[in-house]
Image (cartoon, rainbow, N blue to C red; front, top):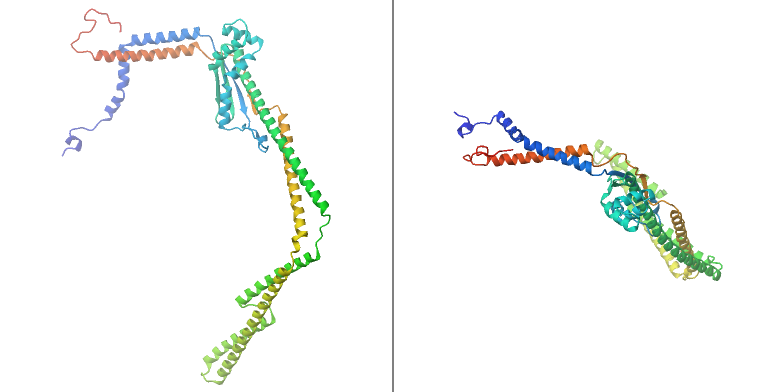
Length: 456
């Protein structure tokens, strides 16, 4: 019987066929290069020559970079009432990058170029005399050469600048960062001055409030020189204490009455001993019932003694419960009497106690105003200290120095790159030409047969 592949009309593929199919494109490219080698060589030579000429003709450009570190304003975290948006976050970094790319910042940096570099800048601008218009023209030309990059893992921002002169190339990034630091310091100074003005106004308000509170306390003490506790007030406090103690004792008695326990008293101990004796007699009766007949004399005497003990226990428990109920009623009457005594007292605290409460309230208000005033004065001192600091939260960690070699163009690398690019273009043209020749009809004679010369 034939295999399933042969039954359906196909044979299994062989690994050699797959391996051969992998080399078909390479063989096709090699065939094109063999047939059209002259075209590919000419395109590569033309591309390499063009890249070399451009690299030699274009003046050399230098590249320098300076790095700045953004610092978070930790000293502002506790200040009141305004906290500037100088903490390091994504929005602050994006704002800083935009400001460093600002043409006005570059124009200010161009205007601050020293005299020795202005001559070179005038030569690049094609002008004879330095003026703000020349600085504007240089800003327009150099704007595309300024690059600002931020490293995501850190708060470092790098300013890069390209120019045909190495000294100008190093001076512009340093001036841009210096101008940004100066601008940021001025912004922080304005915010600090606004915050200081707000603090000073609040300090004035709190000083007036504290003075008024102290005046009210002084006036109140002058009108009420002594506020002693009266005898009626002392009696009211004693009654209140006694009422509280009586209520506690009442709830204790109620709990004992509900649980059937009165504590470690003599009657409670005698009741416990009677219950123990009854348990012993019950055990003896059970032992005698196993030894004697039901109507035997020892068994009858034991049962009589057990009945007597049980009767005594019931009488004692009934008497103890009556005593507990009587004690609870007495405690209830005592609490009610104390409550009526308290209700019967006149409004004792309406005069002296209210005056003392009023004095305490005035003193608390004065202390609160004093605390707020101290906090405001402390914030004002901290803000004044920060205003005296020259730091702006942006520190230049690496200055740009004149580079020693040209960044671009580089004739060797550029020539090789253009040659490779020309060779790729030549290979593409050769492939198109081969496809065109393969698409011609079979009966059409080649150009060499009709007397035409085929260069490629």
